[in-house]
Image (cartoon, rainbow, N blue to C red; front, side, top):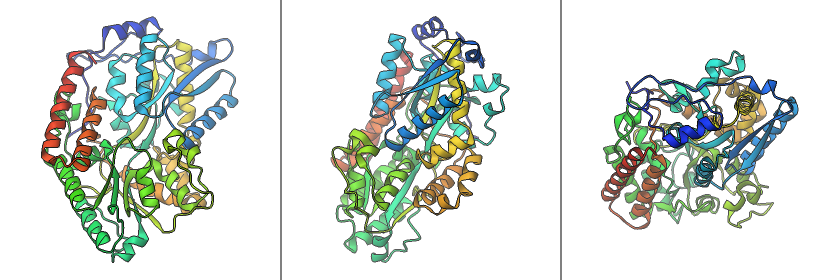
Length: 491
C-alpha cells in the first residue's frame, strides 16, 4: 500500500549551523537511513518573556484571503497581551515568496512563520530551518494542539513518516466551472457536467457545434498542477520511490507514463480541434474573462477562486482589490453581472471526477528564532486552527475546510449553505474528503523545477503545437536532471 514514509534528509551543513546559531534545535533527520530526531518545541517559552513577543508571518496572498489572515491575526493580538503577530506580504506569488525566503536564510532574517506553497515540504525539511508541527503537537498538552478531526488526506500530504511538518493550511483543489445556459443550448444536461476528460471533449464538441464558446469551449490556464493532479488521481507516480515516500528521496522522474501521456494527448487533441482556449501560465485573469464574456463555456480552475467567481457572478466585485497587481488594470463595472447561470462540479479526471491530491498553501514554522518566538508562533497557530477561525478562513478567505468541525459548522449555517459560495465550496470539499490518504502526492526537493518543466511542456503542446509524447519525454528528462542536481548539491 502506498503510504507516507520517511524521506531521507541530507540537510546542508551551512544551514544546520545557521539554525543552531539562531537559537534553533540542532536535531535533524539523518541521511542514510537512521531514525530521525525532531527538534524540540519550546511550547510555553513566550509566557516568561518580558512584554510582547513579536511573530512575523510571511505570505503571498491577495484580496480577501490576505484580509482574512490579517483580521484573524488582529483578533489574536487583541485576545491576549503576550504576543503580537505581524503579517507581511512578501511576494505577488509563491515563486517570489520563495526567492525572498531563500535570501532571508542567508541574511539570517527569517520570519517565524511562512505560508509557502504545497511543494515546499522537502525544501523546508532539507534547508534546516523548519520547526515541524509534530514537535509541538507531541510536546504540548493543550487540547488545541491536537486536531483529531483534521482531514486524513491533508495530514498525509504534509507528513513524513507520520510526522506533520506544516502547522496550518490553506487547502484547495481543482474544480470545473461551467456555463449552464450554454450546456442547455447545446442539448447537454446542465445538471450533469462531464466527469472524465473524454466526457469533457464530447461536451466541448457539442458546445462548438451549437456555436458556444467560440474561442474554444474549454478554457484552461496551463497551470502544471492540473496535469499533476490528473496523473496522481489515477494512482500514477510522477517521481520514483513511490513519489519519494517509500523510505528514500526521489531520484528520477516517472512523468513519462500512460496517465501523463493521456493528459497531454487530451490537450493536444482539444487544441487541434478548436475545443481548447489555452492560456499561458503567466497570464493572470484571461481564463476568467473568457468565461465571463462567454468566449468559453467551461473552465478548469482552483477552488480558491470560488469566492472571486461568485463575486463576479453576483456583481459588485472590486477586481483590483481582490487580485491586486494580478488584475492587470482590468476593472469590472459596479453594476456588472454575469448574464448566465454558473455551475461548479468536481474536477473531471482520466477515469472519474474529483480525484487528485491536496493543493494550496502550507504554514511552516521556523526554528531559527529565539525559543520565545518559536513558542509564540505555535500559540498563534493553535488560535488560527480553532474551529471558529477555520470557519472564517473558509467563509472569507476562500480556502476549503480542513477540519470536520469547521465543515459541520458551515453546513449548519443556512445562509451559507444557500449561497453560491457555500454550495460551490461544499462541492469542492466533498472531492477533498474522498482523496486517498494512502497516496497523498509527491515529495521532492526540486518540486519547483518539476512544476516549471510541466508548465513549459503544457504550453509547448497547446501554444506551439509540439508533439505531446515528445513534450512529456523532454519534461521527464528535465525533471530527472533537476532532481539529480538538487540531491547532489544538498539542495
